[in-house]
Image (cartoon, rainbow, N blue to C red; front, side, top):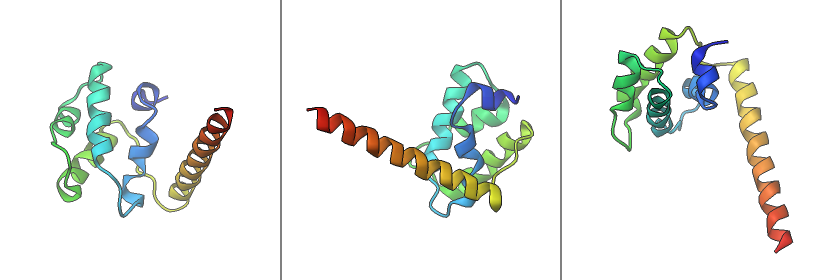
Length: 106
């Protein structure tokens, strides 16, 4: 398994950055900082972690791609992107369901 996937549960979301027109690249800065705190440090990760928020997609996008490429991780597009979309929708529904359940307990 790839170290970025092992060390962070956000890597799959970062892999889908090309598939969302309104992707929030601030997530990528947090991801890079988290990786560095877990002792996964490269020049590209350091560059990515140095961006200030709110990020500019056009400025940060090449650095996100460099980190993924550096670790031989592909960016999701097409059918793989569709699967990520479904996972995100499922997680949101699960979160809403949990919140409703907790609210009904009060």
